[in-house]
Length: 301
Image: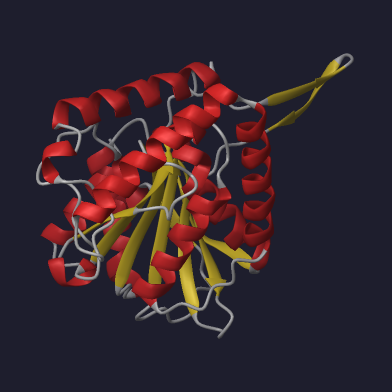
C-alpha cells in the first residue's frame, strides 16, 4: 500500500511559496449550479498557470464509476481524456502566487490523500486553504445569493452569519480535508454558495461570483471576475425570459420571493437567512443533498 508521500510527485522547480493560499475544488460531490467549477474555469482562463504537483490518479479513482471520455473516429481510437488531480501555481493581478488543487474527488484512500495534501501544505508553507462549491437552497434568483462559510477557527469566518446549528450530510473529501487540517493546526475555510434549487442543474455564474468575492475577502488575493460577470448577465437575462414565458415558473419564483422577503423583514438587517424554526432539519437537508447527488450520478452514467 502506498504511503501518503508516495501518492504525489512534485515539480523540481517550485519557487518559495511561504505564506501562499491554496484553493481547492473537487469534481464529483456537491456543486449546485457548477459554482465551484465555474470559478475554477475562470481562474485557469484568466491567469497563466503550471502544474507543480500531480497525484497518482490510478490509485485514487474508480474508473468504472466515472468513466473518462474517449473519442472514436471511423476505424480507430483517437483520444483519451486522462483524468488529472493536480496542484497548479498561479499569480493574481498583483503578482501574488497562489495554488489551485483541482480534479476528480478521490474514490479511494481519502485519509491518505488528505494526509498527502497536508504534507504539501507543510512543505510549501501554505498559510490558508480554501474550498469552494455550490449547494441547493429554496431561494429566488431575484434576491442576493447567500453563502455558508465554515472554518477551522471561528475567527476566520466571523463576518459570516451561521445558518445551521447542527446537520449531518454525506461525507466528502473537501470537508474531510478541512477537518484534518484544523486538527493539525492549519487554517482552512470552506465556502458554499446558495443556488436556487430550480437552477442547480445549470451553470449559474452568479453563484461563482459570490464565491469569488468570498475568496478575495478571505485571502486578500486580487482576482478579476473576467468573463464571469458577462456570463452572469447573460444567464440572468435568459432566466428572466423563461420566467416571463411560463406562468408556472413565475408563480414558483414569486412564492420564493415572498418567503424570502418575509424572513428578511423579520430578522436583523445583517441576517438574510431564515428563522431557526424555518430552517430545514438535518434530515431534510441530508435528503436534499442525497437527491442532488443521485441526479448528478445519473447524468454521468
